[in-house]
Length: 257
Image 1 (cartoon, rainbow, N blue to C red):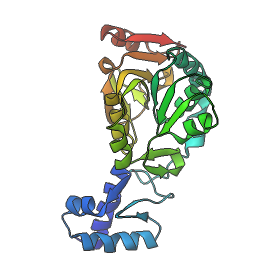
Image 2: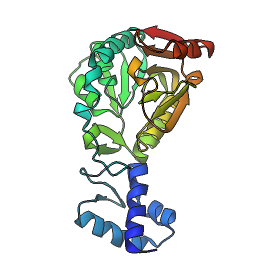
Image 3: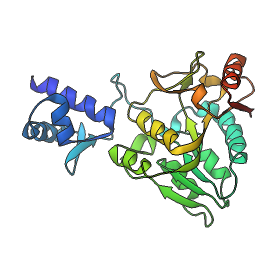
Image 4: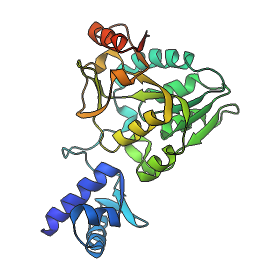
């Protein structure tokens, strides 16, 4: 395997995982750990990765899978802000006091967090924008999952995040996505975040999907789950009626904001 092909393979593996150890990368590429360390040192020097203890994470200026720069979290999908505000208010109404709540990565869940201020609940998240909403709240008990900081998206990702979720038991999880297909598949477009979303669903007694009308069908090629795996869908009034019917047929509740 040539140096360039090895380095491309390393970058792809790190992009998929968010953070990867030397051992994992060596096994994936079927090369020695010493070779991986040398390649990571080269990639670190040219700014493609940032070395960590025992492995590496993509550098902040890294690109997405198709080679285009990642869109900063703060400016992502802001034209749909009114939809998100309305859904967030409805979402907070579904949370009883004393609940344990998992708030997903995404731009809607920080708005849900804002509506949960002052409530006697526990909020668990890997979303740094949720942290910003609740860090000074004297009533909410805030638990931050560990992991590697993905700066553009204000998220925590990687194996540490997944290991933390193995120890979590929540009452409800609020799930975000990039699209809902007309066949009921709930999809996303971030490979590094999909396993974390799925682990959050596994850790919660109920799953509430936040998907406004513009996310049908939306975008994304990574299947997170199906509408049959969702207990409640929160959407907006203009959502495709076929999606509403599909969710209800699967036994789910639909709340329109």
